[in-house]
Length: 446
Image (tube, rainbow, N blue to C red; front, top):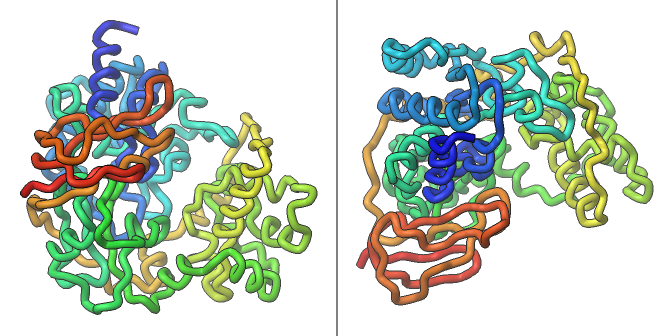
């Protein structure tokens, strides 16, 4: 590895760059690999989100600079920017920025289906290679980074740590928009920036409608992985499913699952050739986990995309996703590791015609009315932030500041202990540390 490659990786680590699309995997660890290809994922996998599109429209040069730096660090000979073909403005912005390039970076147009942008599917769509069961894109010589992550890689190389990010505020709000906000900005502040929720009892989701998580407290702060903040009515299908407990789902599944195979037929991992059959995992509910079968341990292969619960089983309202998540949790608790590791895989022939158009996703999930333009609404000036310490892959960061201490924006305030996978956290505003705990550090500008 060259001195310059080491410099890039060190800068990325010190800046606290992680997978901004939701995975939160520390980017410096990815860049230590030597690969053939680096893919900038600008596909905006989830419906309603527009943060990546806005970023590419305004700062395509920064994304491409980060992509070039990632290629240099990993020794990659080629790079791709994966964009959905209907995002014409973003494609044009990238084309313009590429006009003076050396040809090593190209645009790859993706179909507008869900979950286009999933890391494994992106590798398959761009290269034709299938990531092994339980593996990573690295196993086929590919690194995939979110477009925002690569923009932050460029910033890191120039000495700027991760202190802010664009967030789509949409759904049941009065003025849907994309806002750039400091990390740790309370969800309530972002909601206010969008004119507030339409209904007093609307529920907030961190992320997209398919894979996002319910926000327990709107006073908590957004993370580096928060691509969107969505408001939905309390009685909405998506909210009801996300509130369903595993006990309720098991009872419902035992009574209503008719073994129609539809969840398996549409499962993106199954279509890539992985040994994942959600309908058989549902059938295993009757047998418990005394002797974990391959259909139970296949929970390790599930991407939690939500196709099975929100699109395949929309009539019965069952959730193989939730059942598989519980299986995985219990298997890990019992010390059982992923036994699935087939490497020579081929995608099923049906993959090309079982892709679900985003328009169908919007209709089936009842969010068509929220699929509106989300213009860029500028920067949010936060008076108080709560910077999360544990919302990234690996070990939590440990505070390096104390209550009452004054900090400047960009100061490193927490980091994962040396030798452990994790990330550095920075003050996203200047001010005084007003609270420190294991989950977050609060900073007040006053």
